[in-house]
Image 1 (cartoon, rainbow, N blue to C red):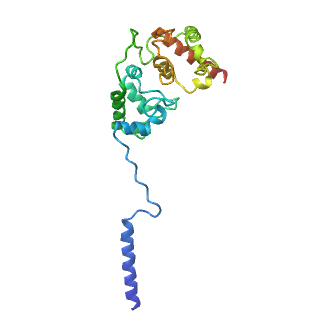
Image 2 (tube, one colour; image 1 turned 30 degrees about the vertical axis):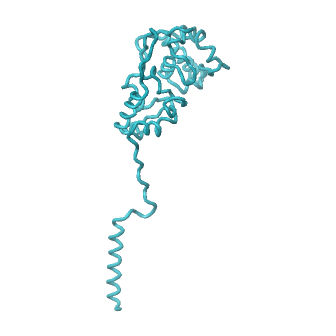
Length: 229
């Protein structure tokens, strides 16, 4: 074989390699394909929510969502907002892609509709009025809230109480006023905490009572924060 011919064949081989490489992935390990996120409610809830809210929407460390009273209390738009944006100051993250989360608007709609369709049910309020989800026009009173706490909550939530101290600054630093309000209204039936309908010695708490309790507990957090500065 003559030298010019060998050079020509070498050039052709090099061009073929370049052409083949142009259609290949870059050197190194190929990127793993993105996992498709499910579109059905049961799978979406199990893979994204059950770690905090329990396999069946209850029994987890987070808010119980498989509860008729909670779903009667929270407006659908508020439920969606919580899922989309999370709750600042708590362990609840934002799930919407627009907020840096992994879920599309359609997937969040599936979650919201699925929660309501699967777990919402008619609730017997026993003649009590259903409070507003968010704090409204009623202004809470610290002194009134302190009296109510000592009368209705202290036995379970005092230091050494069966449910743990609710007035610990460490706990109050991990929650929000809305979380406190929701917990007072709907209780934690999965953990044995009664709801507002029987929380006042077997009688319902009024809107004023709820606002007073939230204001009192929030004031403890503020006083501790001020004392630590």
